[in-house]
Length: 183
Length: 158
Image 1 (tube, rainbow over the protein chains, first blue to last red):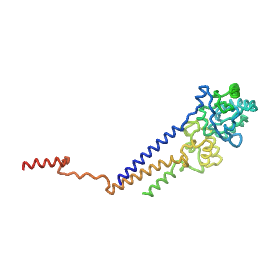
Image 2 (image 1 turned 180 degrees about the horizontal axis):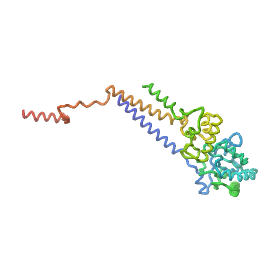
Image 3 (image 1 turned 180 degrees about the vertical axis):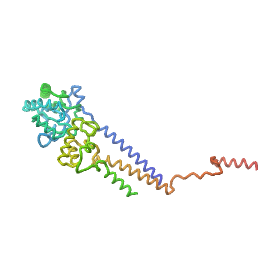
Image 4 (image 1 turned 60 degrees about the horizontal axis):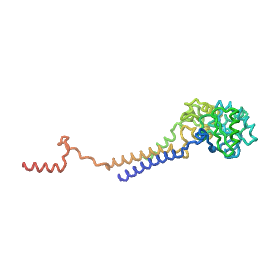
């Protein structure tokens, strides 16, 4: 009786330790780092990490995949971010200027209250597609270091090695769009 | 024993901080301690003065003013920000393991202690050493071989 109890306890302890080790290995194996920051530094192109989020400007969802074949300007922002407000007019102007040339500006609202983001969009007269990433899933996927941050995606879905961290101006927007259209 | 264990488990589930808090009329103060700042690493709302935390506070104030229950507020924030907005993992799905594993561990420990206590009370434990012989005055018991040889040596003098 005593021997069997001891054996059972030992087997349970080993199983528990093995289970915890398995969890640790699984976590390490699935904890993949974004290739985007490295590629940006090295001046290389990598496929833009995909996303699919609920839209803020209308009902439904928008995925990056659905925009394949167009140049996409991805702007990460939040309503609580000061520089995001400052750059909003430039993004809206770029969208209006290039939308007929197959260029889409997509605003990804990160870690923000959806109603605040909608109010921000109304107050700043934003008409380009806006999606809500409340959980901040894109932060790791794109290796964001802060908000705002802007990426340019070519028609083939690859990111142009030109990323603007911080407030973007019209000149930088034009340069990014030109690069994305020309490659 | 079984009843006591069931009572303990029930008390643990019911008498938790969120269980004690008012469901129908929550306060910002109590919710601030149960929700995380969306942009801060490991900080609850009450600890954070980040702009995003302030936005969440404003939303909570609006919902409280609108008569929302605590679970509705937490549900809405979880829908918008994901489960990581909650300071404690939800008691459902895979996250429920965070609640069940400690309870399971405590239950297993209680079973082991109970079994050991039962065995000891039945005298099934390790054999006890024989009671000390008062005539030996604290000296150790001689080994049988040594005692035999000692007896033989002494027998020569008889």
